[in-house]
Amino acid sequence: MEEPAEQKRNAPTIIVLGATTLAIILWGATPIANKIAIVGIDPATIGILRPILAGPVALLLALSLRLPFPTGGRDRFLLFVAGVTNFAIWPTLLSVGIGMTSAAHAGLIIAQIPVFTGLFTALLDRRWPHTYWWIGTTVAVIGTFFLIVYRDGSAPDEASVIGDLIILAGVQSCAIGYIVGGRLVPVIGTRATTFWGIAIAAVVLVPVVFAVVDRTDWSAVENASWLGLLYLAFLGSFGAYLAWFWALSHGGITRISTSQLAQPVVTLVLAAMILGEIITLPLIIIAGVIVLGAACAQRPPKAR
Image 1 (cartoon, rainbow, N blue to C red):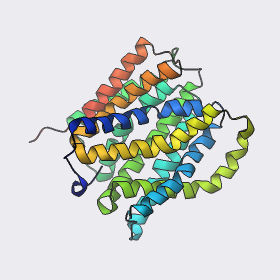
Image 2: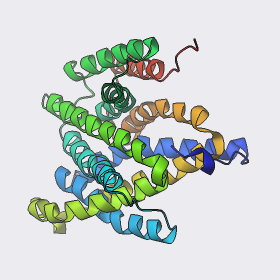
Image 3: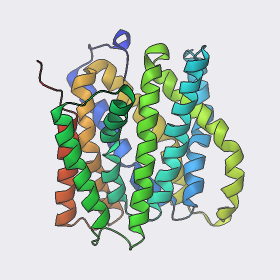
Image 4: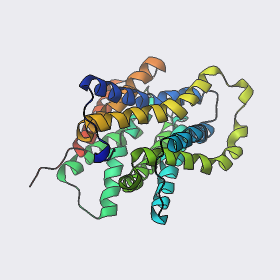
């Protein structure tokens, strides 16, 4: 989230709404693009290449915008952890998991990121979350449990359970990255934390990519897979983040942040329209339960 000093609430409401909608659509389409990319490219390779391709652009943006780099040892460590968990581990686990499950399932599991972020924050700060958080978290976790154990036409095969669990592990890594990055944002800002984090993830993953690059027959990769990979590296990262940051700074954090609850719905719709995945009534009910639980968990506590 942007710092108060960076907030500018002078843009027309319709433009703020447009930027918010663009970010949600770009993020909601990420599992779809991932599913398309893995048709021709190894899933783990996609997750690793995503920050490697975006890294040079992130570095150029950070340098051209003169975004601050942390000077203290503790802050540099936080930036390293945020970069690795958010932009290295998370996209890799997401791609591997999507290779074993459906985009619809992936989109609904991703909706758990705020829940795990709240849980890990509470454990780290040793504070008892408010009642709304417990109710919402319980509802969302129950919905996710049924999503994973229930098999229907939206899941490609029985291995989908493994894929769901891999994505769930990635969601937890992403939540850790959000918390660590949140500790750093007041020091260097959101854009600096994001762009420097992507650049660090790229540097970390460069040696790793040589271990997986031979898993793909690059001469046989079709254009759709290339486009999916490029979407993940640039639109799913920079396009969505830049639109989201702009909307937060001009529309207000409290008013804009709750719109992320629409992201899994976008993924469900796109999965049906583009991938032809079957969206059954039980899946729709489970999606409603998860979104409702996440919304309740993000509801602020009553003032005492």
